[in-house]
Image (cartoon, rainbow, N blue to C red; front, top):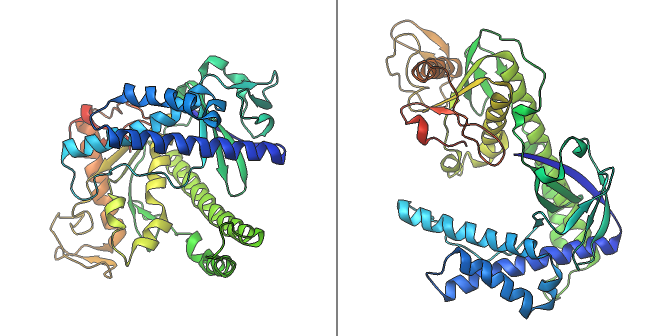
Length: 405
């Protein structure tokens, strides 16, 4: 599946209609969740049927497209089924009990409720919500695809405006990219907090630390926003709303900088090697460390891995995820375990091997990756998720049971 995004331009009344549609979607989701709580044991069909009942009971729900209402009910059932799966698997800690949605930022249409112009530069929403025709601006060309391939259309509200996303049924490898010449080279990557990553060739990439650099400005904007907040009033002033929007736009800029860096770095790695091995890190567990959480989130390891696997699938390169256990402690020369703390940046072994801690780990990761790729016949399984990514190879697990990150 491909996701194409365009910026929407319209009138103020049209933006207000989009906001109303988003509030309606939030209302449907919360009502469906309440219906499930009051009638335990009901299934997916009952949730979908209840969304139809809501269209008859509430006039503002009836204005929204029927498939958009159904898509909102799907979101509710998705959270319920995830909760059931966690209970079945006996997941420890937070098992993800469905919660009421306090903030909603999107409304999703399926195959009806919208219509593209002939040149596909404008989109018209045909339900009774009053959104109307909006201009689209972006770098993608929708004329390449047929209308039957567009399975979902989603309007997303962000701090800097409104966007429309098209979910297109197409294999990313069918769109012929520029062919990459085989490099006949393999590389192991060790991500960290001193350097973004160090590979087995001793190439080092610095962490840009976009959040750290913007933290002073963010704190100042947050203070200005807080000073304008009034507890005693129901509706906040326009000055508060403007200050909140400035604060949100700054956060949005930081997240986009981080995303662009991860994308560019991952593409460079894919272009430089035929096999890339990296650690299968559980970042969700690692950020529980309150001393390192901010630095780990700012480094964006998960985002880097996401793009690494995406480009690996697109260009036919092998990406291998290996267990991180003892990759930093074991000696890359003799295999002996050498205990060292995070502050120790140099690996010194009794066999006489001395190297940078991160490069030593990268070499160990590469060895594990080559061992795994050899057992798998250097074949990547083409099991994709919604974004069209393939499954990375994990050491010591059944390849047929693996899913992408």
